[in-house]
Length: 282
Image (tube, rainbow, N blue to C red; front, side, top):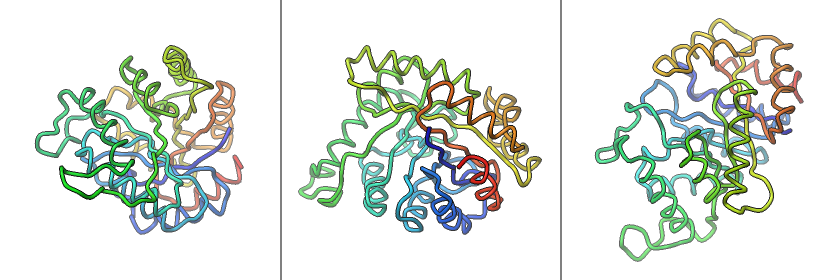
């Protein structure tokens, strides 16, 4: 199982200048991937900005949005934005996307939370067209350069339509920030959807877990604040890994359920946690 680390772009009042340094340290330490978390209506750094900063500060480590709320964007604009990040990185981006839940994240006129699933289905076709070089906006020119590629897609969500979308368009599935036993159930559903769609091989399965080693108290406060308006508040806060033993236990639990990769998201921007985590899991 590969081990990645999250950029703390959505830690409450993150110090943005730390993100490139965090990315460079994570690459040097040997993590497989740098992940981001997406939310608009929160005092953090936009995941596209965080990924672009990480792309410029690194040269080898993978980049992954885990997950990005694609339905809050106009489709062509989103496709162009992420294609640029992927090209700047040299083709290191894996795009994890979801339809979104919180209404306050939908801030673009005409792109509210209603019908977001159907809109996402249409958007996925637009992404492929844009990345393939089709003319944009009814004009003559494509939105991307000739070096653009079809970016690998991972999908989050637990509904049947989300899983079907993953099997049709994606390379794999990202579980929510839940304990391994709950993620295992989602992984099983993703595998079943993959088989039902007659896809070859197996989907890439990614787990997510939170940790805070330098300042666990701050980490818990940050998670409680970030997840305050969801049903997962207590679950996420209670499963924060705040000791070496807890981190090792979580890593083993996700390996045991067959995760291909685990992204350990920091609940704070305490940069010492990059090295402390690396010493435990790499």
